[in-house]
Length: 391
Image (cartoon, rainbow, N blue to C red; front, side, top):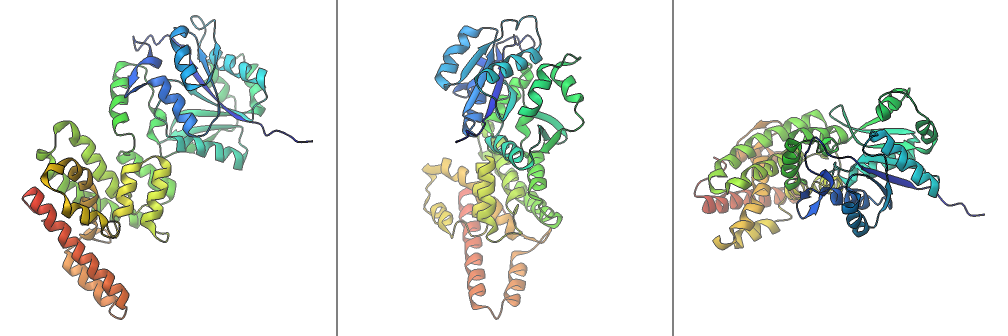
């Protein structure tokens, strides 16, 4: 007799009245979609097929969004007088009426920027470790989603103590808390200030900030000597980037600097593995950090020189493409001006390498190609900017 594997569900809480925000959070715009649509999409992109949304306040306005996203809904009739824990229990009961789930990922609907990688990793950890309760954490702070395994659902539904869901979690002897390289697990939307921060983070969603880069290092166990090297590269690249700011539209400057910094800090994130540029880029793309992934992939040889050829062919009517490519070239150049974890003269560094590989013709050819690319890159950038960015 065939047995059907139990499923993991997502339970999104969307019944509240958003009193502190003084606006209905789920339907606030974020880019070209609503906050609720983004939150649902994050779980769908993580291949969580079964999603239930608990509604309450302004339910009628939510139903078209839920129909569009093709997710299920249950109505919390007591949303005006009961707390969030009641919505959690309402959702769990609705799921269990359909089937006994393997577990449930619980998340408020106003946390729309969780990376799908985080959700997939939590599911993978549950499969491997069989933990009944898993909490996503960033920088020691607990975030969302929260995984509740089937073995704790009845206990939770029968909980009558204080402090709702948190009170129930406090009764647990053990909760598996997993540090994730995803600061967005903390980004809710309780007040207007949160919403303004959320909009800024949305624009730079695929560009990790400095703290997140550190969390990625921890997640990948990047050695300390590599971290020091990357910090030195970042210092040089950022110095060059700041010299460019006067020529960049003011509204794009912060994102430009974040792209340069994250690319520099992460370019060697997997330096201990073969073909580390490609391997690091693949991992970063899986995490959802596309811009530093592009820089990581290109930092060794500018994609075998193809990006340099593109740069040489650009004319001044293509300045948007130039600014798009520039972070990659700044990190590439800065990397050549660092030896181990301190700044160096490129010619001196190159001379040492030629001596080291003097009996290896193939390595010497590679070094000569790199030298030619570096000075070509430096000269083309000087033509564009009017000054040498790496002086």
